[in-house]
Length: 172
Image (cartoon, rainbow, N blue to C red; front, side, top):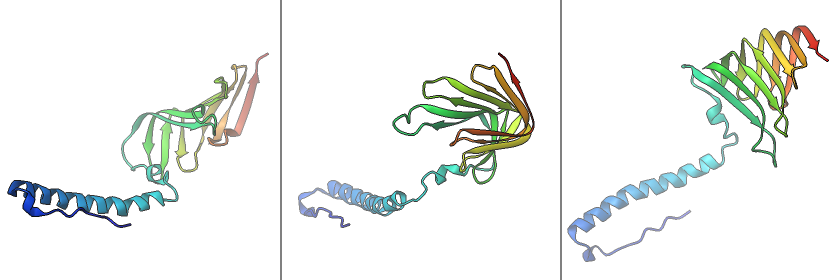
């Protein structure tokens, strides 16, 4: 890609204009060249989401929230969301969440599942949460309650697996 700079006669400018013109060209040429060199690197990045997937290993996030959206044409509707009172970033996009709540929502906006736990880990790159601690899940209108110890939540697939000491209560 070629850059064309307009050649001008310096004789038609006054001294102050000539100095201003020189100053502008010293700034704009590196900016334009930098833009031309950096833009293809950003455009060719195979995983643009990887830039924000790795969180710094310090600090706490209050009111942590990660939504998952339906695919097009319903990309503006939330499919599921995992929330926590607070989260602590670990290495490589891993978060430790306190008091997580998982909510699964239908396309019509009805809540299909609400699950609560004491704590869990969440992997941002794999879009999944897991814990060995207790979890309580209510399905639909709350007539079915399932609780147990240990779970895995695959957010992109909307699959909750409770692994140990599973008990269910069904109200008619």
